[in-house]
Length: 279
Image (cartoon, rainbow, N blue to C red; front, side, top):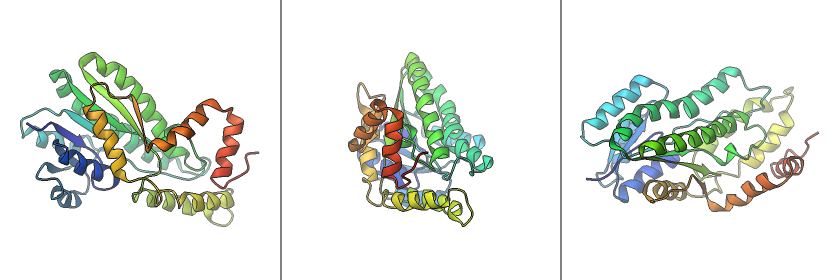
């Protein structure tokens, strides 16, 4: 029997690429997302190994219905890929609190809700894999990405707690840290910056400079299949890493962030992103 894996946020980008990649690698993939009609198109790319499942990670009833559908096929889930996410961008001072809550509702509480719903069957089986898709932003926080980065920093901590606790019942947990990836996710981030560039906004010029730099990132980024490869490794390795960075070239900036004094790294980051001035 093919090992069943649930992927959240599978209708586009990293989730879509991961669904196709895992299906071709011999997994039974349940591709979850809110837009079922788009997922139906994805089914045709998976050699009859992908099943579309309507799933809103912010709705516990939707999660329960999705798991009931998966249970109809008779096998407990072997893997969960927590990929669903949204991006709220803008200055910390100006982003509305409701937007901060929306960010955390999907990226943090949605991840927790799906994991909590899946864990009983993995614990009963004494085996399983959970892969949380975080972000390089969870460790390297660019200006005007604070809300998104905060949610992904929370995923870092949650993944550590999960890994240590779930190991007691045979479940292994890994975190994936993508950098710029060539998907449409960047369009959401770009769109979120636009209101803060209006005349009279306190950070308008700096946001405009950052937006111009950021606009080059995702179109020139790595293929989402590079992330899918890391997810596959986390699901199949006897000793999966606690963290995977995709693509690997971003390991350098992580080392700089960890080793350099904050004042130096801050200036380097602000210069690189076009903002250029700290104080």
